[in-house]
Length: 263
Image (cartoon, rainbow, N blue to C red; front, side, top):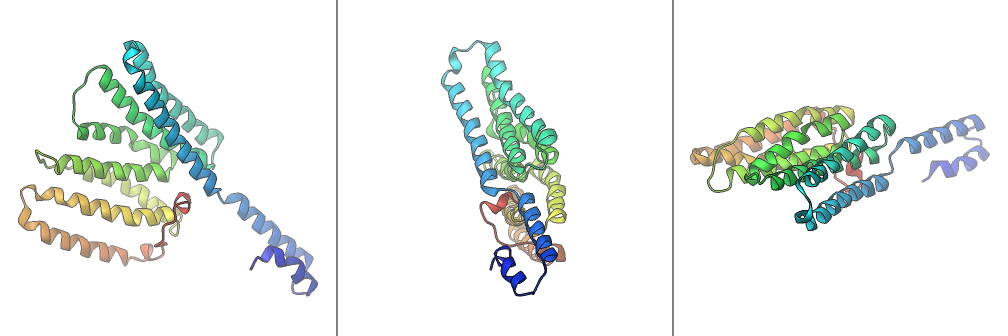
C-alpha cells in the first residue's frame, strides 16, 4: 500500500481533509530527501576502490623508470588527494554519505599504497605484520574524523588480518596490539548503537566483532594450549550474555549489502 498514491481517494472519501493530506505529502517528501541514495553510495565506494587500485597498478607498472624524487611525490600524492576529498566531504559535502564513505575508503587505501611505495623506494625490509601495523595505526583516525562505517569495518578486518599474520605464522609470537586496536574501535561501535541501533551497520558489527575476537583469541594458545577450550567456552558464554542486553536486542539482526551503508 502506497499512502501517497491513496491520498486523493482518502480526500474524496472524506477520511482526511486537504490540510492533513498536504502535511502527509510534506512528511514523506522530507523523509525521501533525508534518506541517502544507497545505490549512489555503493557506486561511490566501488569507484573509490577502483580508482585507488588503478593508480597503484599504473604506478607499479612504470615504477622502475621513475627517479627517487618522483617516486616520493607519487607515493604521497594519493594521500594528499584523499585528504583533499575528505576535507571536501567534511566541510563542503557534510551529510553526503557517498562523499564521506568514498573519500574515507580512498584515503585508507592511499595510506597503504604510500607505505608500500616508500618502503620499496628506500628498500625498507619488514614483515607483513609490521606493514599492517603501520597501516592500521595511520588509518585509525579516519573513521572517527569522517564518521565512516566502511572505514571502521575495513579497520576491523585489518586488525584481524594483523592478528592472523602475527600469532598464527611461524615463528609464533604473542602480540597484544590487536586487543589495543580493538579497544580503540569499541567506542565507535557504541556510538553507532546509540546513533541508530536498527541500522545494518550495527548489524554488521554485531557479526564481525564476535568473528574477529573468536579468530584472535587463539593467539593466547602459544603457551597455554590447555586453557584454550575453557577460554573459548567462556567467550561464547560472554557473547550470549552480551547478546541479551537490551541495547543489542533492539538492533536489526539482518544485513543487506546496500543497506550496510545506512547510518
